[in-house]
Image (cartoon, rainbow, N blue to C red):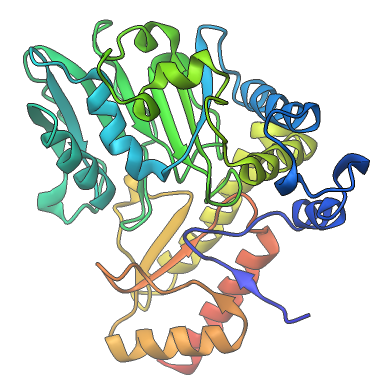
Length: 360
């Protein structure tokens, strides 16, 4: 088999042992004679998968009993609409922190629903850092932020502290399950699965029961969070295979030692790459300010576009996949989600060092 180092930004690398287990069970899940994709979502066999995924997520993330875990579809992009449709009422204002392209898109959708306010932004700095100096509007319905910015390589280290009556909503699509987070300080967390949780297809929502009670009664059924909470995310056919894969990934995380181990390993990987960038004497330049650097997406540039293209070409020949920066910003990006190994990062650093030596 061809040796590949997968640094894709999403869909991203999955643990090899997870893929191997899925392969073993693919044609005959738990002696049913069927693939998990063929099972009825009302069957006992699938129900056990569904419940296990939910329970493992609650256990690993230490989700309080005052929260519900929901499985939805449509990715994080559908949540951009669902959130204001549920919680942005006519007498309130939705507050957004702009830290990159995804938060801009979330705001754009909310503006179609009701009144919005930009509470903070780092757009004037090219989104090279996490915004500061948050200024809430009057009658805030909620404050929305994107915890990790895949395109610009920035990440919130700590979440803002808000008045008790202002829900904090976080898009954690690209760093959920990568570190310990204070669930009780965030009223709603949502995440598309295709970074750390599993393959694309399922979106995880963790929502406080208190906020759940505030869902607008006229929200369309499949966008209303209460629909999922009241029906154990089984109102209609869920993305069964994606939830099955999510359960296997969660088992893997638990076997690795949980979030304590995962977070330590992610820091090691990020520090390895940032160290190589900082010691390159300007050959590689990190695009994010040091105090805002992401532990999930390491973004950097080379001195010229020609060198960048040569770097990416030679990297691909060596088996490094997914290192091109997002089309909006160019440059390079190494996405080092949970399943990306320390060995892969060491191999990339070795390649970067050799490339610099040969192209001074």
